[in-house]
Image 1 (tube, one colour):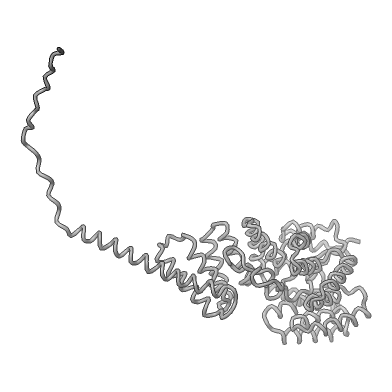
Image 2 (cartoon, rainbow, N blue to C red; image 1 turned 60 degrees about the horizontal axis):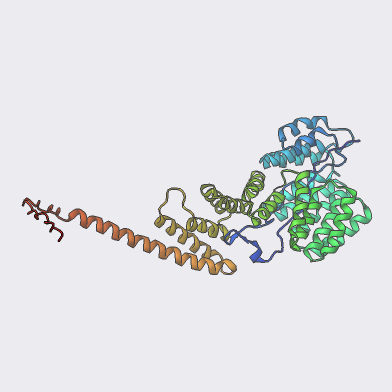
Length: 420
């Protein structure tokens, strides 16, 4: 039987443990892999070969995917169609509609985990941990303590960094339900956070052998490979993620950063623009997109992206640093050099006011001084040129030289002497 299941993965945080210097790309700009506050929903298929809705989804046609949901095959949870509609609403940028549809899906089947996980993750993305916990407890009670719903609570424990507790709870859950892939994922993610990457790899591989259609396990494997410095292998897993879920913003964000590291700015723009359409409120995505635009010499677009990052996260220092570099390095927007250097100095100083430590602080200090000095020099040169122009305009006109009216005396031609 062909089945279609739009599933929320169990990722909670995907910040990679890379050295700080490794995050500085394109003239020390901070290209940040996987720093989205809380991952958005993912879509996965379970024996979905031949399903029109899934095919449309993977082809990037959300409208067609939504219209085909009415033709879902039998055998799915009663909440599956509503949940699928919620995922599509999320990817179309309507989080309010997505939350409403997830709630409806959860109400149709109290033991159906994906919409509950979706609602929890939306609360976590908003920083509402207590709200996420309250929702989980309500849904767990309504389900009669179903193992499927109990596994969604591991998302909250992961978000709070309770790795040991997650592993203990996941083991107990697997004794009750050995096929619970959310428990597998939570255990793998907790082991990654504790540095037990080989065990995490093994758990991911075991889960993939049970269901090769869930993007979250491939994304976690990409995270492991990036942490180990294996960027090519990470790319392979990230590409597999977007084969399964072309809208996955974190995979797109990471592929964008990796593309910048090979100076493939056009490829980076493709991935990061796709990420920004789904995760519109991620300052990290907009910051990375600005860096990609700058690398491609699309300076006005870069400014727009950096401005958006600052608007979304005014306390985040690196957006000011990146925008300062843009004003310092590039001619754009019809600004003269004085205006650009003044703005660059202002932005570098804003960065320094927010970032007391880090590898970019020393550089920003130097850039701020250089921008201030360049602005001063340009002003002096401009003042000198204007003064010279003024003096020239005020000086009396020079009299033309008198014409020479005397007739020149012609020398007589030389006389040739006869040869002897």
